[in-house]
Length: 340
Image (cartoon, rainbow, N blue to C red; front, side, top):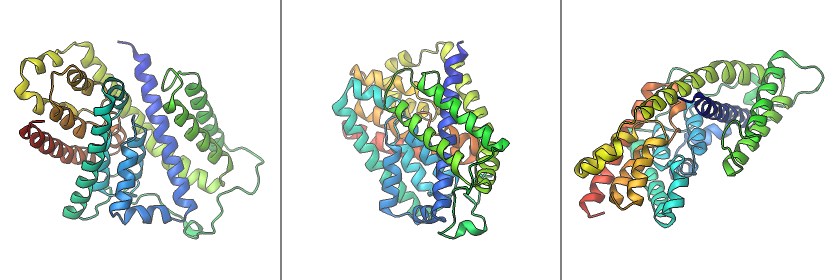
């Protein structure tokens, strides 16, 4: 088993989640909580915005929505809908294999994700994150509740241990992404996005006040979130790599038992990993699976997008997956009954 790609993926996922958490903290404090209060009110337009972010190809949009959810900024319905819309890295494969049907699928996932999000919020109420890590969301301290609170430090002299550590870490991450050691091996929009957000994060680290740096970025994000996320992501990816090396004939089993394809699709979709879903993408491209099975699998699976939530709260992870499992089974079953 080659550990290098597993480590590289773990660093990429953890690094992106870290910088997105950092930027979300900055935006929340800079707006004195206005961003959080706007998102927390829910409604169709705010939920649609969150769902649209989740539907972006790759896992970056899903990571962003998970960050918002774990900090109490979006509802349970919104995160469930966003994960329905998310297609993970398989989005790029589907665009390459069947672009027309892929775009149709993405539009369907967005619309269905928005519908499920609004339905869940209507049935359960606008329920925010209930995990143990950040039950109160992003904390605002004293003067930070004022819209005129300054985040820029008055002097750029001196460099504390915390600021130096975060600056060096982000610089190494940027170098790793630029050289292809972390993230995509070739230049594409994902690498560009990683470089952009990491560079913005480095700018924030260098310019913010010492109070914001210590209380928000160091004590909250770096010390509380990052180690746990990296440990979970690395452990899950390592376990999945071991299962793949065992050469379990999942694809041939599905071909031999087409009646179980729908159930297999939603069950495999529960795995927080991009790879297993490619079985259904490939079989559909070869004309061996109906569109309904691909849709059901796509509703439940979300690439690596849910790994950070699994790291923060396995209970919340299970709740979102339960909703999406039921949603995938319902839509896939209905489409199969209609002849799709």
